[in-house]
Each structure stands twice: as structure tokens, then as C-alpha cells.
Length: 163
Image 1 (cartoon, rainbow, N blue to C red):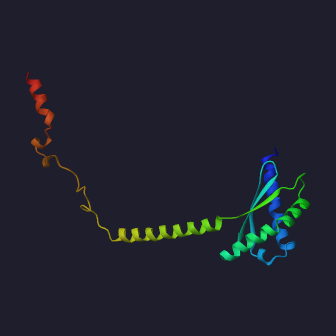
Image 2 (image 1 turned 90 degrees about the vertical axis):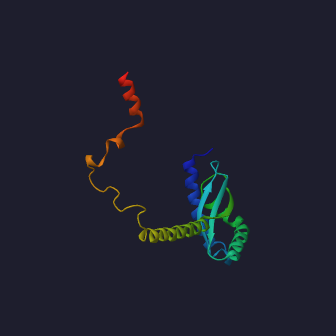
Image 3 (image 1 turned 180 degrees about the vertical axis):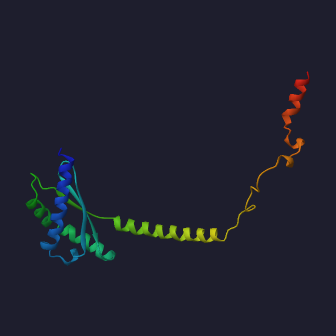
């Protein structure tokens, strides 16, 4: 088992090597729109997963995936030349879903902003349900009758006191 920090450094090096090799060594025009976004290496340094995005539509995505599968051997050879490990890791290419998730998140944020604007517009025209000032000032003692202040339990206390 290798150190996780070493695996992370190796992953970053593989990411750079693959990105450069796509531009220099692979002559397939289908790889022109590919951007390598991340790479991860297992702790035993035997397998590398490389994440990529493609600029374009669905056809460009499928063409890029086919081109990467075809160029996997050349890219692995290039990785083997440029890293210092005993065994060259196998390469696996995975389309990165971050741009798709980011666009979905942006749509959700736009919807939330629109709803917030609707609520703000409703609140601007809203009126209080009761009076504007429910506390109309100081309360005078003269405003209360003695009958209003008696509690139901006071009668029972008076009877107990009389016994």
C-alpha cells in the first residue's frame, strides 16, 4: 500500500501527462475538444481514473469517448515514460458530470431567485392582518373592572379562607 499523499501527487502528474499527450501524441481530431479535469489513483498505484469534459454536443461526447478508448495504449505508454513507479497504472476514462450538475444547479438558483422576487413583490403590497399598532399605549388601572380580574379559582380560595 502506498501513501495516500503519494497517490495524490501521482494522480496530478498523470493528469498533466495525459493532457499534454492528448495535444502532442494523439493525432485524432476527435480529441481536440477534450479537457482533462481530474485524475485519481488507487492507493496501490495500479489503476488511474481520468475525468474529462468535452466541448460540444452529444455526438462530440460519444466521439471523444471512442477516441480516448482507441488512444488508451498510447496514453498509458506516455504515462509510463513520465512517472517513476515500478508498474504503469491502467487508465480508465470517465466523462466528468460536474458541468451538467453545475448547469442544473444554476437553473435551480434562477428558479429560487424568481420565486424570491415574487414573494418580495407580494410583501411590498401586503397589509397587516390586524391593526397597525396593536399596543395602543399605556394601560390605565381605571380601565379594568374588579370583576374582570377575578380568576375562577379565587372564589374557591375565598371559601377556604372563610372556613
